[in-house]
Image 1 (cartoon, rainbow, N blue to C red):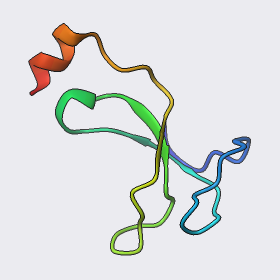
Image 2 (image 1 turned 45 degrees about the vertical axis):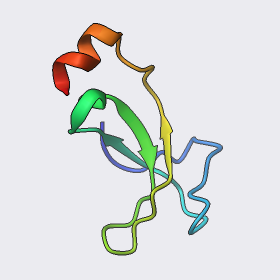
Image 3 (image 1 turned 90 degrees about the horizontal axis):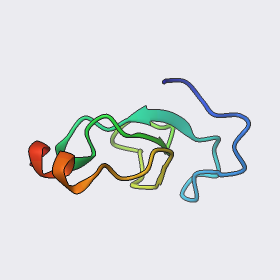
Length: 64
């Protein structure tokens, strides 16, 4: 799950750009897919639209 999501109606509100497909690698959201700002740090903004639903509480607690 990578690259840009050209078919999305969403745009990064900070820059007006097509969102990037990303995967969370930290905390309770580990493994969740989301759309986010396509820029790299330090220009990247904090905008996120989750693609996957939140994990069940039991799973979330295991990653904390």
